[in-house]
Each structure stands twice: as C-alpha cells, then as structure tokens.
Image (cartoon, rainbow, N blue to C red; front, side, top):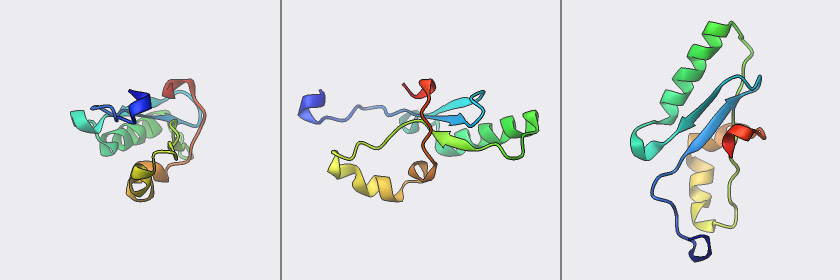
Length: 89
C-alpha cells in the first residue's frame, strides 16, 4: 500500500504528556476527536495537579505526501509540539 501512495481508511494520532504518564489516541473516523483528547488531558492535568503539564503529539508529518500539506497547515493537531514517544509507534 505504501508504494501506491494510498491512505489508510482509519487514521490514528497519538498524543502524550511531557511527563510520559498520559497518552491518548485521536481517531477522527470513529468519532474520537481531538476535543475528546484535549478533555482527557485536562482531566488528567487536574487529577494530578500538574498545572504546567503540556500535551504533545507523538506523530510526525510525512512531508513527501504533498497532497496533505494543506492539512498540515490548517488542522489543530499539527499545532501541538512533537515529542518522540514509544506510545506513537
């Protein structure tokens, strides 16, 4: 599938906290939106009393997919900073 440049039907995007204790997955095609991930992150932040907790994305853009560049510039998921994580693999 990679060689044909086809996209998967269902996309998943993993987010992690800076402390490595929280991870959550966005799956837009199944109704698990970024808003749900952000709400779960805010809940975790409140429960753990970590006011300075930062949510990161653990997935990188695939720049060779030039047809996705508009998404990379306009979708809120790409505004989060990147953090290398085992959860995103």
